Image (cartoon, rainbow, N blue to C red; front, side, top):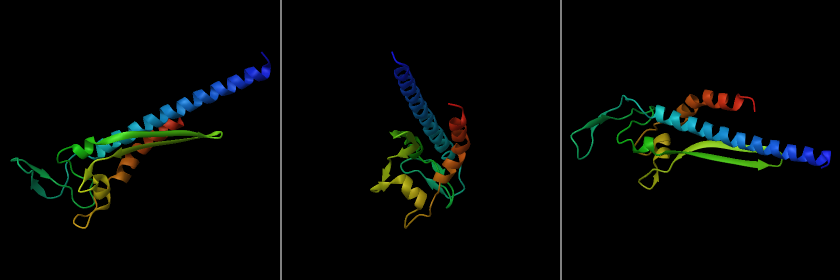
Length: 145
């Protein structure tokens, strides 16, 4: 076997290992985002107190500007990790994200909460999720390859 063949196979193997490592780290980053969302979307809020329909219980809603309150837990539990990795020439592009497909009234509940509606002031949470996860994500990608 010629030296150029050995070098070519070594480069291909190294690139494949690097691609796998980028994919693995991106998955870990996506998990950090999800964990951060679960943390930001928990706890008590300072809004009005409401009765939960068909029960004798009440819950405290979020005030405008606070992350959404947890009433049933469905929105908080609806977050899924999403990883997209692709190789473009000699570059890798990796995107870690989370998404919730939970709908309410024909629209995505998360977007309604983040941006508000005509009847509700915004309950921003996205930037808080990112800010909480960012130090851990930076640490994941900063480790030597």
